[in-house]
Amino acid sequence: MSRIEQLSPDPKSHIKTLMRIGYNMSSAVADILDNSIAADSKKIEIYSPPGLEDPLISILDDGYGMDAEELIENMRIGCKDPSIEREKGDLGRFGSGMKTASFSQARRLTVISKKTDEPIVAAIWDIDKIEETNSWCLEILDEHEISLIPDIKIDATTKQGTQLIWGSLTCLQKGSHALDQDTELASLLSALKLYIALHFHRFMEGRNKCVFSLNNQLIKPIDPFMTKADGYQEGRSEKLRCKGGYIVIQTHVLPHFNRMNTKDMERLGGASGITQNQGLYIYRGNRLINAGGWLGLAKNSQLGALARVQIDVPPSIDNEWSTDVKKSSLQLPPRVKKELRKFLSDPIKRSKRIHSYRGTVDTANKFWKICEDENNGIITYQFDPENKNLISLISSSDKELGARIIQYLKELSINLPINHIYQKMSESPKEIDQQSIDIEMIDAILSKAMEEYEKTNKDIE
Image 1 (cartoon, rainbow, N blue to C red):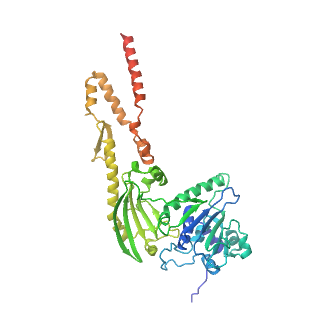
Image 2 (image 1 turned 90 degrees about the vertical axis):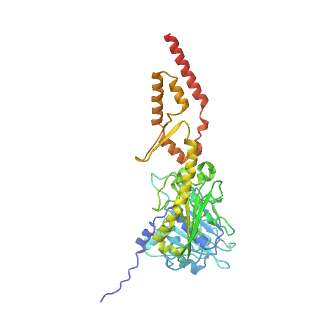
Image 3 (image 1 turned 180 degrees about the horizontal axis):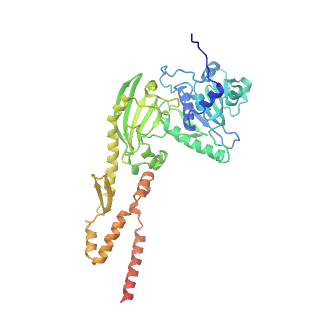
């Protein structure tokens, strides 16, 4: 007769697994922000003061908070069944995001919370104590202990809210090859600010917007579609019925690089970042979880750099889309892939049309000839031998000089700096301005060459 053996995970080993789920600091903080937004917060403050011997990260919101019983339940690992249908606006998934995200970045998690007309409550997960005792020993603080928490922002005057503090940070490198702590933390916080501005941009606008700040600086939203910019094009859209609601698909085409505001362009990573991040932008409950890439449905191309497809999905499709615990990756169901393919060609073609039009203005001129060999798949750029000025110059020169001019033009064409031009067009196209060529310098060099030529001929005579 078989028997049942209860094999609960060993806490000391289990916590090490939870610490290695794969968050970076930005995605870990984002998981905490999901909880704040689900708690109907209107103000979220992230604080990480420089100069501390033991750096910390604090996240404070004004959401509806928790009482003692709710706090203990929410400190439990995996406290929600992921298959249970979520309420609208609930960005949670497994109910373990706050803990696993925190354990991936810090060895000490302190949570302080206050509900309206309820006392302040606080609890601490300390990985050192878990490993020392090999038990899930959650520390529940009394009123006096709560008042002694360093950097606590919640007090008796607070109506409601929750503060989370990460201590003993593991996201900072240690050892002889590590950067200065403040320098490294500043770099991580700079990346975090851009991440929040992009991934939570839709929560920063509208009537019920939430205000985000980092070290007392307001975080401004980044619109990945540049919908308010001159030259933006809105494409086709459609709603697809799915479990628990609708999937909404909307296509966008960004303005040409030359029409983009320089500051907005830089916030999206410059021309190279915009080109690299073309593709699908998938939102789960208004929160961006996939920022670019075609997920196997198309290939990145320079001409398709301006194409974007926005996809809004409800949290109810998590199982079908295989959303992971970090809510940072997913898999498109076959049915959705089939529908999406209908939408990809339009924004990509529009993007190519914008580039092609401007390319024709810039390159199809009387001095250069563009040769496209479709059979061999080769494109070359060479001087135009039918240029009337060139023909006149060659015909008025003697045979030897004409041959030398043609040879020089051949070498000029062969040595066109294609790689450098491509790199600069990708990274900083606005810096390229052929109209600013130093004509006076060229004239001076040619004048000097002519003087040398005339002097040489005179000496010979």
